[in-house]
Length: 438
Figure 1 (cartoon, rainbow, N blue to C red):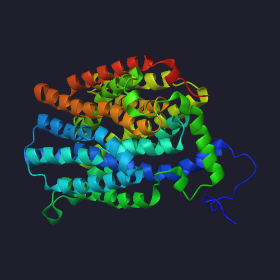
Figure 2 (tube, rainbow, N blue to C red):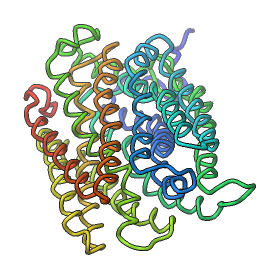
Figure 3 (spheres, rainbow, N blue to C red):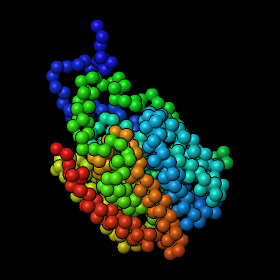
Figure 4 (cartoon, rainbow, N blue to C red):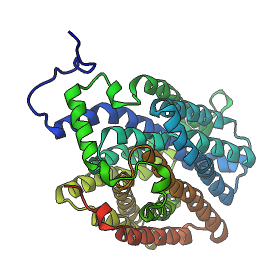
């Protein structure tokens, strides 16, 4: 007698399944590995902020040149963002997720060969190219499994990779640079790129064996459980755009693009310059700078999950998305005002990072309320272009203003203004998209 392809993990049952339990099982199965991969992606993207503490003087790279180089990652990322979304559609999420990890791990390791400003620029650009398909593939992968009203919580778990990238990666990067400097005639920053790039290569091969392109191909979930997933996805499908070109006519999609740009000018401007800002507060070793830089992100890891969960409980999205980033802007200004008081300055930076990170997960649940099907990856790619452009603009402006003024004060004030503007635009999103689903 024929049996269902999905019968082995759990026998079909006549009793109705609890949807929350089903999606809890799915979350536990697919989120941890993607979270780990995204952690190393984020770490390999931003560890240049710690490499800066050694490599700038050794390679004779100026503050402005560092800012441009840090931002060039996003130029490469930008050029392939929409094509990468088409690649996800053609090759599938498994190939794009695994291939992206392997490629960026190799480029990260190869960054040890940086010898001057030009090679620094080239390696940052290549790293952006290799990471370009990963995030659209993640959005497409999650869209296979989760309806949009469940995505805020899921994305808050995924984006834990960002604060964890600093909580763990900051002290780790500083320790590697201090402990390995001079080993086998390599500088500490070179060892850092090698040691932190290798896990991405290994994880890329892991994804080839753990990710499916269709939920019907998953062997770890029963047919009854898949029916629950398909039912929830079908319930919200009629209100979404399924093709990318018609979706481009949706004004709210372009509003999300603008929010993504403004928000991430502040976000990435802060990320790439945090070690420099902390270093200016006192005489600290690279490891100590990493530890202090981790404090704001440790608090942010808790705040972003609490904010997302409270949003679901309160059935409110708008203020849970806009208010944190506004508070982040205010606290960022406070960090400048309190610059002469290191403890107060770090406290303000902590509130700023917590606010910025809390908005992040809430914001990335919004595109899936407009888009579905093949438009999901492409639309996410379009919104992510705003982030990519901002990723170049934010660090570059900070570097230029640091070069011109000798401090980060003016640049930080500009970052705060972009966060305020992002909060205002979030409040302008039409209610039919921002409201919590029933």
